[in-house]
Length: 376
Figure (cartoon, rainbow, N blue to C red):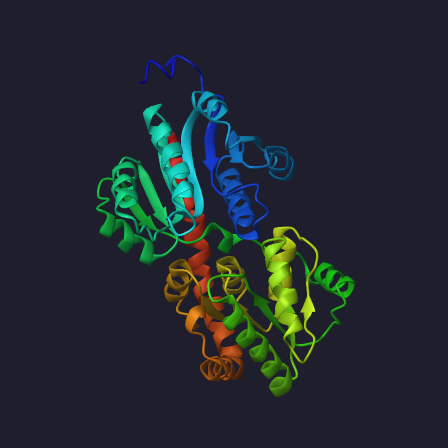
């Protein structure tokens, strides 16, 4: 099979690193991961040559200043692998079959091809699992066990790797790359919020909600919780979509169920702007993992709303509260948790600030390990 792929071992690689992930789909969390990976690698090795697999290679190349190719053009992917030294399965919860088996097969296939063609392979700050189907678990175990190094964004993923029987790679628990990103300045954010119709110096609670199983029931509870915050604490709600247009549709629907009209961000913003907006919040209630990651990185108190084990895994890792699974969300319990976090928000913020020093170091450690592998 190697001969069929026509590998020429004498070729000089054009790229140091090929990065694969859920890129070019307009998802803020994945865009933040890619930005952080590229920034951190360039901090250590300024002249590093990077190519990214993307659904929208033209935009990816323009935004991040890298070369990019169509992730679905298998012949081009293989051709570029011939000219690359290291393959990064780059950040996010890619190794799972909750989204679909097809998604899992894509990532496993690219990892397998990279190893087949002699590239070094690293899983970069990945979340692992859940992988439910027995056939998927078998192939995941066999392929992931062949990679060189794995870094994980939380400890729960290490348990999933253990249950899959992955033993051979070097494994490190680090942190999500996005934890090291910096927000836009406060003046720029105030202007942005003004354009969105949000007045300055108003206490704000952020919501990051997506549609998932049981949406009709939990969306009503979230609407009631937002009204409760407004009535009890005189604090306005801001819905912050991280994936367009689906999150915007959810925000508008929940707003229609509320007595007190919330603010809704209706425009797509770059990662530093989203971070700046999150920093402006006094509290964030989030389903989207990266809404919680952004907030924690900025020392903003959070309440997690669990729809996927990766969300609970992160909250456990950073020792922050959650209101249970959205499928079983209880309004009275959620109100109680809101009261508790709101009344202790200053102390929680101070605790997060202390813990963030270590988290940011761990996020940067992913890039240090990558360069070490590249140069070994």
